[in-house]
Image 1 (tube, rainbow, N blue to C red):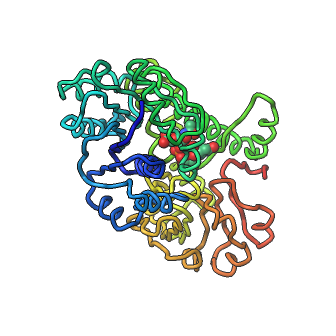
Image 2 (image 1 turned 90 degrees about the vertical axis):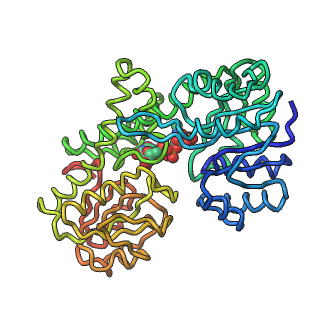
Image 3 (image 1 turned 180 degrees about the vertical axis):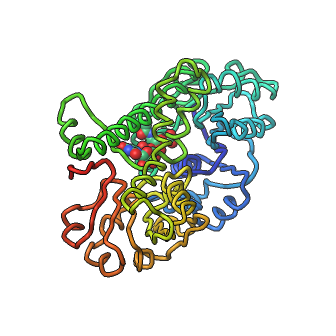
Length: 428
Ligand code: SAJ
């Protein structure tokens, strides 16, 4: 199948680069976002998201004359739905954005069209939920139009490269739908394009992120054990990973972002009695911010009230500007609640704020006069921080490395007492 025009619904971290890539590859692309502010920002030639290379790509897409943006969809050869699927209270998937996007397509759907869902969804969403909504057009999925599920799999911070190079799974409601999906993505995807059915593709996506969540939970549990047994977990992991069939991930202050901390719940919600391990991993990772707060409390003489803490990083992981479900934010909130005087600094998202904490405009401002430095996110500028310079600004000499990322000898040399996540009293 050949495609001339495309409508992309949702212009977030996935929809915007996807729409822009198709536009720079010659398709006429109509990008849709219900948020007026996002549409006007894009029309002004700016990107509302910070992701390496994205601004340049979006500008190239507009310059090509192939990209338009609006709050409403239009007719097109193909539609891609890339809207969020957040969690509701009670850890249930919120599919209202998917429903609304599908409903907005209905009046524009024509025979021969292709509809692709990219949003992460519980198993069977494409077949049991999306197909019936689209059938309200009077057209039958499969017989009159093609319908497929194709999960995005890109890593924030590396989206542009991974969107092109990663293998892409396309699950059709029938073979012709999967093949139509392949023909569309082959426009810019260089990785393998693997065809399957829609529900398998949904499961694949959930399995990938659940696999990562469970493995991070394991690393976090090891970190706790190392703290209890006087072991340096970072050294232990490095040694264990020399085994040819072991690859332990990194412990940390928790799992944030819009994907890994959410998607496993879609499986738990769908089959609670069949997912004790998946649920437990979620609980382990969600318990990490509280653990970090206890580590700080313990090292600061059992008392957080009145302590002046410089909290470095609010994003959910290094070198991204995304603050969604960030464990760093949960930790700062808890420290503020415990009475600590917290100054935060987030170089990737200047607008990042936590109620009750003081946002600093730069690193020096964050450090000046603080009793302790608390590294919550391993952003590059923090790893490049010169300990001697930090010593000239901080009042106290305590450093909490909650990512196991700092250069220990350099910080100790500058006179700091280090507390490293996952390192017991005798370790490190
Ligand atoms: N984290 C750890 N230890 C690790 C790895 C990560 O504590 O060893 C933490 C991070 O600090 C962060 C969270 O986990 O808070 C998630 O970070 P991540 O880099 O593992 O993943 P995401 O959420 O940025 O992107 C994931 C990716 N999925 C997999 O690697 C299986 C990406 O490929 C998906 O496209 C993305 O979810 C998504 O959109 O679903």
